Image (tube, rainbow, N blue to C red; front, side, top):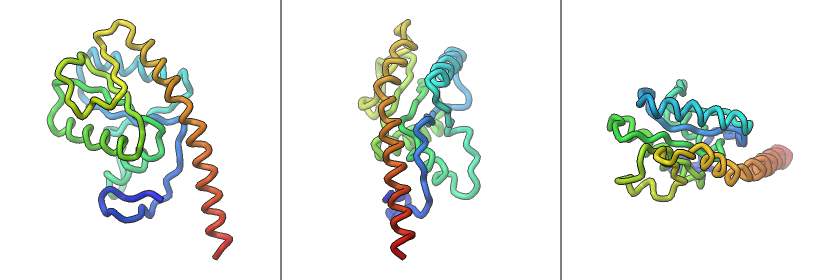
Length: 171
């Protein structure tokens, strides 16, 4: 059972696990350097067999927050591209989405230009500093640590399907 963060009631939506998808939190407008990093990260994810869901690109029908929440619940982990020059409204969205990720027990990988003065809210994340020239290698190691979650999500999906079948047959 999933509790909706907006209503504190059971979520009425069917949320299916997406073991090979990654939820990405970033600004649409970002520095040239961060755009290049994002491109490299997306390429590395593709090589590992992951598809990317970018929160800022979701165009939901109806409740936008609900759409974001469903994607977050379905993805095994998230990635944040953090830039100190982000607009406050973008930063608020990212903090909200990142908070949902943590609330649902999902790890988050954070890409930053520099680690100094990082907000304390990011202290529980895997942090990749772009100051480190081998940041892509560090990212790949993190992906390998998180990759075991795929099996977990497939198992949970099977359990959820079995539970759904049980509910149908017991009526």
